[in-house]
Length: 175
Image (cartoon, rainbow, N blue to C red; front, side, top):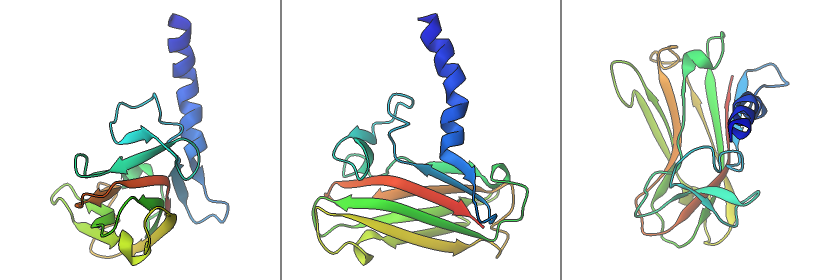
């Protein structure tokens, strides 16, 4: 049992490095997950085994769990450069229409929750149920102090409908 524990401690940094890298174009860091690397590592009922976009694990948002697994990071942890922009991408699957779900990108400052809150409706891209579609959004951070290093960025899917929404292959990159 001790060997497994020590092995997991040794492997944890490598799992993080595999999901966080400096962009080849030199613009900034990017963070990605396909949820395969989180299965068994986090206790989150929003991560389920299913027919995911890539692999067998995805995050779910539904009537019982309206929020998918959340990506959350302090902007100071992204890098030393002043951040200008965040690009968000997620593959989403809607089990039924109509569906009132959004890909949310939010920034909380120490003084104010939701200093920025943008929700891109999934149905702006997804027009038919039962099909994986990629949702993309980009937001400028060089306005109104949004790129303050003390701020926290959050990315998640928020679902207010009865439909099941699956989320997979989330990518967050900074310029």
